[in-house]
Image (tube, helix red, strand yellow):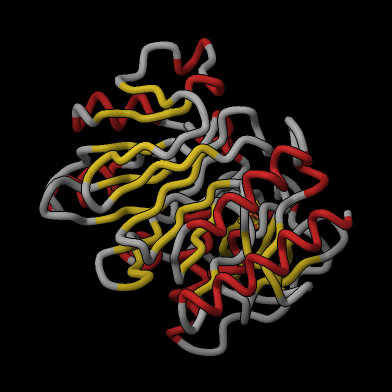
Length: 290
Ligand code: SF4
């Protein structure tokens, strides 16, 4: 919970504030860009919400913050923020909010399918999400893109008996007893509409998930950057091999998709699969030059 005594001095005067426990994960700035902005190493309230819609976005950022670094004084009811999640991205794909400190605020997604819902990476297992997922039919599969974003996977397994999927190269003591491990570099169909694609690079066992040849859940492999106005990989946060990650990126040119839905960085929808392919080609060329 945020502490008023530790609020950053650069917060705009008013109800909402960010305190010094902020880890600069970017979630609040993406959820409520009208309110939160970036300083050198943290977020702050650049402007207090101007209306109810902005206030609701700020409350969504408050509950999504992995470190509880956003506070209100006087205290506001967080209910509208809680009820904002899961937030529809498009159709049956939603952003879960409630990011976890254990995964540095990585974003997770829910895919609602008649054949069984899929959770991509783990949000915090808060009561609201557990109940909401239950109402939506539970979770059949928890796809873990890589070892860093597993967070509360065990709690989701306990509640929903879901099959947890992770590449064996990212197996650790914490994920030693999952239900399914991918191996090698060949793509693995998890269902007719779900394809797991190993993408070693960020970590040795990183994998992405392609849904209906439209949505690519990319974990920490690939994201959109507004600064570069293009697709990027995180050179400074490549823990295994940039060379391998570049090769994995090039292999993604074999697939069609319109959406990139990452754990960190911006999501992006291209106008068409062809436009996304051109973006990806630019990204590969950029990676080869870095
Ligand atoms: S969501 Fe929380 S931790 Fe992340 S940048 Fe905002 S205040 Fe900081």
